[in-house]
Image 1 (tube, rainbow, N blue to C red):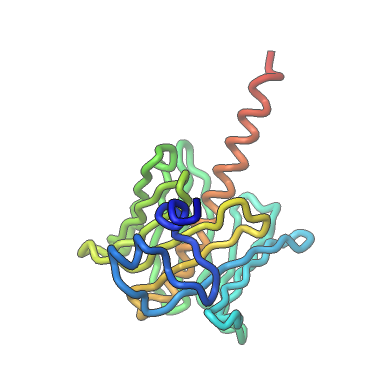
Image 2 (tube, rainbow, N blue to C red):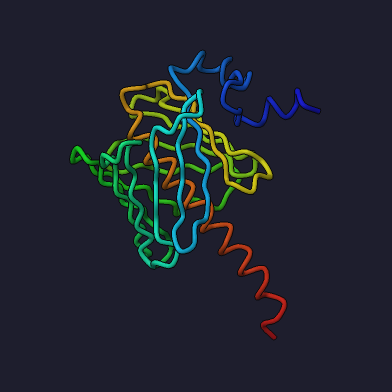
Length: 202
């Protein structure tokens, strides 16, 4: 049932209207961006495009790197952000340094429940999400929506859309979404590894 899906699934393709729930809750976004990731040999490459499918930003990271370093640049190669994962005991943190000097951290120790809240230390923002529904909303320190993020179900290319409500924070939003993609992918990889090893451990 597509109408049910459009209620729970915040993802939409370029040129499509945002999801009804998002429009009802937050109104029309200022702009929407879309990500598509490709695996190119030893690098993971993500294109971030606009409604016209023009590339606005690009992100690239080395696949086999413990610290998982990622660089985000504009379409013409200007630096936007550098993202690094630091594995620490029970939870993993992604440190983000923006090209303008702003720094903040995504900490995902809570990434286990149906409803997750990830605090963005250094901004005072919160990412509230639902991994099962593949939807996330980013709120600023005052509780106002910054962006609504939807992940496409069953997509081989790991597609996300972001409906942006505070366009002055666009670059920060893009950096957070790229870090979020890494967090979700790591989580999926570790859960499939643990479920696969459980049966053969004895």
